[in-house]
Length: 450
Ligand code: HEC
Ligand code: HEC
Ligand code: HEC
Ligand code: HEC
Ligand code: HEC
Image (cartoon, rainbow, N blue to C red; front, top):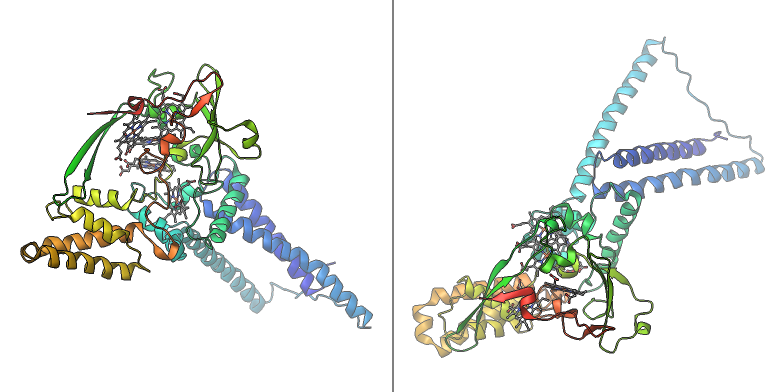
């Protein structure tokens, strides 16, 4: 069978890639490396070479048949006759062996570097630069800027090995495909469950207690009047054993299970909720006017971290107002500049074709306003005005991406309930069980005001 060069090359290719495939498979299976991209590289490349090798065999047989039909003698593969007693042949064989080893070393180092690069944030965030620009900009500014993209988006291999590899591969393709959609749709389909990603670093059973959050807002009057809301948020958590299963992370208590069915693709409208509590009692809630029929054929999803923390690594300001509030709270935009809130928000909400045009537009608008309306302020506090302009421009670059059609509020944030439905997707006083019990909405269920 291996009578032609082509068939020999095919067999060699199939055998080598087959052996390498099995080797990488075993190495990964025993957890020697848990690099998500190894899967994509090897589980796509090796099978492709394997198939190519196998295809060469019938091709070679076909060519051989044609050759014979044409009346030419069957081809023969002549192997070189090696005689290691001949010093010059011996040297040649050793040289080939040595060079092969060096080659293998170089190739494996190169592959390793390649894989390492694919694993890097640079690859994910910057190779398809424009497409990922919004997510990358937000990511760099998030609490997870030291966590690599693949740690959340693909996850490590060990437990459900092959499935993880395949879904990792599929995810990369789906992101590439989705890259034609602007903005990239959220939620991400088939994101790995939180227990394989978030819970490798966070341990919800260990959460407890309250978190105090101070929210400063500024009115659109001349003095930018400040209001301060101090929330004591009942983070909660805990486990059966610790006996403190309460608060917000109660949802995540291992013993409580919540599943839900969303009525829209963005999971913002929730039609049905199924709850099994620690004692094993099951309760179902339906949104007002929703019947079982309306739920037919829709995905039933187990609630996990990402259903609340859907922007852990890609946070955008809830709105232009909130972005400016934060900049004023930190002093980047001086709250003592007259109408700073109103003017900055108006400058940020105007439409610009790209970041460059926005920079010019925002600067022109704010400068013109102070020069025309408050000439003395403009003269004496020029630096504050320029600082406010820089801050506003920064807010725009960080939150709005005209080329990707990402604007204020494009991506809902599920933590809270003011700017987006968030917690009130369920806790809105209209989700009732058959006996009429509503999902609770009392304000102090989740936070107290101080
Ligand atoms: C801490 C975990 C985490 C890290 C790190 C992370 N992401 Fe995400 N990413 C998420 C979650 C969660 C979502 C939203 C999923 C959902 O709602 O279904 C998301 C969504 C996305 C989306 C879809 C569009 C959107 O904004 O919702 C893209 C694209 C994306 N991430 C790219 C990246 C890139 C590129 C990196 C690295 C620079 C990265 N992610 C790092 C958790 C992460
Ligand atoms: C590789 C480890 C790692 C992974 C994976 C990870 N996180 Fe984190 N996360 C951290 C660290 C470290 C911090 C603290 C960062 C800081 O305070 O600077 C943090 C902080 C947070 C915070 C608090 C943020 C704040 O504003 O104080 C939330 C919420 C959070 N993570 C949720 C998630 C969710 C949801 C996921 C899964 C999508 C996730 N994390 C995946 C390491 C991780
Ligand atoms: C029901 C919604 C919900 C779910 C589900 C949820 N969280 Fe939270 N989480 C919150 C809220 C609300 C806060 C407080 C808001 C804030 O910090 O701005 C919070 C705070 C946190 C913090 C910061 C704690 C601190 O003390 O600062 C971390 C870390 C965190 N969550 C991780 C997780 C992880 C990991 C999961 C999944 C196991 C998870 N959360 C599931 C709603 C949720
Ligand atoms: C998918 C639906 C759903 C979403 C979204 C949701 N919850 Fe819940 N939550 C429930 C259900 C169901 C219960 C149990 C019924 C009840 O307590 O009335 C519950 C109970 C709670 C409890 C009471 C826990 C205890 O100690 O008994 C708190 C606190 C809570 N949720 C906070 C939040 C916060 C904060 C958010 C938003 C970040 C949120 N929930 C989002 C469905 C949801
Ligand atoms: C199911 C839980 C839940 C319930 C019930 C709830 N809240 Fe909230 N609320 C939250 C969470 C979570 C946040 C966001 C905290 C953060 O920003 O980290 C929030 C934020 C707020 C804020 C600050 C909003 C902002 O960002 O400006 C106010 C004000 C507020 N809630 C008022 C109320 C009032 C009034 C009620 C009673 C009608 C109520 N909440 C009921 C969970 C809840």
